[in-house]
Image (cartoon, rainbow, N blue to C red):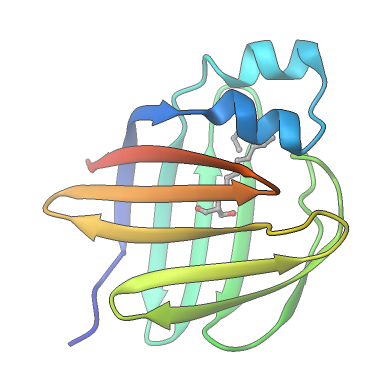
Length: 134
Ligand code: VLP
């Protein structure tokens, strides 16, 4: 049985989100707001189909994908750069590679107990966020 990421996940903590946002070229004012946010994630997993909704008091972002199928991602409301994204399994980890203007861009999700982890990568920056099952 593969891991089931489905559910609602509340923000617990993050580290180096500032470094990640700087690597993405997010402006000062937006970074100041964004680093105070406690986003919520709602994940729906149906076989190899996923939707991930990230919501906050400032902006929301949603992405839908099937494992192994490349898709166009617009990153609207984030850095607005388009990229080609593909998500695959690495054991029980979901690993997304976002190919575009920014080198080494992507993210990984995994679960430890009742916590959801998110590693965000861009260029030489890595940020980690932790969420707890609601
Ligand atoms: C931009 C960078 C903050 C900061 C400004 C806007 C949406 C994996 C993946 C699914 C993400 C979240 C990316 C956050 C990057 C912010 C608005 C924050 C709330 O999630 O779950 O796309 O990539």
